[in-house]
Amino acid sequence: MKARVVEIVVLAVLLALLASIALSSVAPPPSVHSSFDTGRNGYRALYDVLQREGIPVTRLELPLGMMSSRIGVLVVTTRFRGNDLRRLAAFKKRGGFVLELYGDRYTNLALSKDPTRARDVYDDVAGKGLVAFDERPYGYDRTQSLWSVLPVPVHVAAGVVVLAVLLALIDANVRFAPPIVREPPAGRDSSDYLRSMAALLRRAHAGRPALERFAHAFPESRELGELAAKTRPDDATVMRAATLYAALRKEHH
Image (cartoon, rainbow, N blue to C red):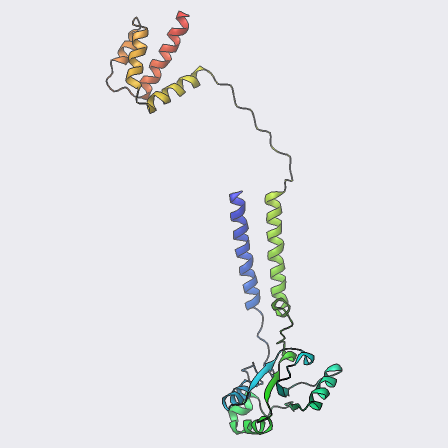
């Protein structure tokens, strides 16, 4: 089971690496008219200028119907349709101001060439309250989850990771073949008993007393006497003496 766990961990790491590669292989998006965008077509420079000049600015990342009543100016860079047009009309009726930036006059590239163009926007919005740049057309929507905005290759890689982990778990926990019947242990004979006794005597450091007892029980055995005469008997000596002792007991009974 431990080996299975290691396999699952290694597989998960490899597939996570696959997901990161898929994410890194996604081409960067083109520069768009967003106040987050620092590319040539973005409005980050304009946003920063207004903020630096003391204009209260924010970014709208919610549907128009959920727009805060604190917003006095809505900066839009795309054209609205349907219900959003009616919501813009209602916003204007409440006293709101809509600043439409559809051209390239105030992009990052344009302001890098002529920074004084930002004054036009400043004059339009100064004193009108909180200025909000609408960012929903560019994917900045708080009502969406992180998963929904990830690119398709990342979705595919994550699906592969989940499927592989599930298969590994199924393989580790579900039996697909009948159990293997193990052979019963073989019967034990007297040699197993002798080996166990020899191991016990070795652990108890009682080899020499055992030899003396074996020799005392059968004084007529010359070999037992020779074995008992050894001052430091090893395991083989004790084993041999125990074997002789068992054989002599059988003969006398």
